[in-house]
Image (tube, rainbow, N blue to C red; front, side, top):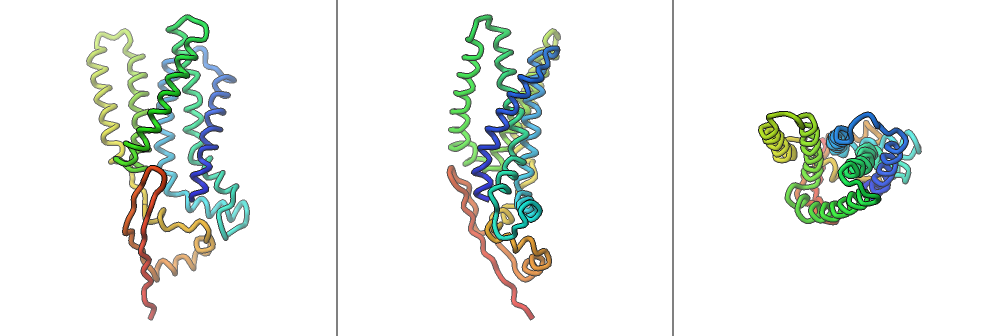
Length: 256
């Protein structure tokens, strides 16, 4: 599935562009930017979490698309890899694209100067991209793993969305301190419990998928027979900064 993951960048960039186009074409001027921003952040978290649950199903999706679209059971086609990458990455990326102009509008409401709000938002966005990539590669993925890091990012967006929406709702409330404390506690709980409570990926299935021998999976009776006559054991699995390494021992059972 290496080709699938390489093409996720194109899906991400396309989603960012589509999100900004949607915001520019269909602006919701009657709804305050803070409410829009909180809802968009929540959708980023929800759809990102759903994407993490789609990744273990990509092998089956690859086989099905290759057979239906290209009638090919030999290896993963370029179009199949592109479609799968878009299926996993596009929707969260669209909401991310909507979030940037909303943040710029919210900043413009505070700073009544020409050009400065966009410059501030763009600068913070660039700084966040740099710090995010460094933290993801050197801290989050080594500490939590690839799935745990993705779920952590989704929970971070959900926690931030919760803080924004509750802050807007309680803007004139007497219980701001208590409410903010409760929201911060809930957000912190999401960050701590989210990565550990999400359904775990089947690493053995992901590690043993042969992207250049799809005929094994397209012939269902043969695949069932092979699984019955063999067993696999995941001996080693490690996710690094630039690659993922898995060592699998395949044992063929003796036939009568």
